[in-house]
Image (cartoon, rainbow, N blue to C red; front, side, top):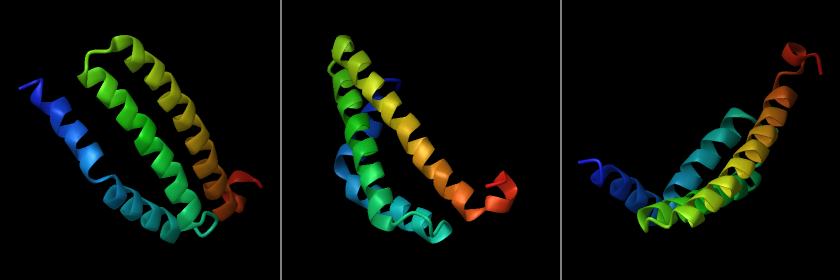
Length: 98
């Protein structure tokens, strides 16, 4: 059972990244007009790509590549969080004193 869960996640990420990217980018763009669907989509494309690389390495039990890929994922998550945070601050300046 435990081997099945990573395989299902891997298949999901590899099979439908465009659907996930489009749906999430559209939802974020509707919720916050300070980020375009294209910009959000680009962030999500990079996130899905780096996550896919990490999952493929882990599935192959290439733990050196897995750790290296995770470092890239982590750095991108921080950058993506910063970009999304800036959009929230721009959307609600009175809340954040901006």
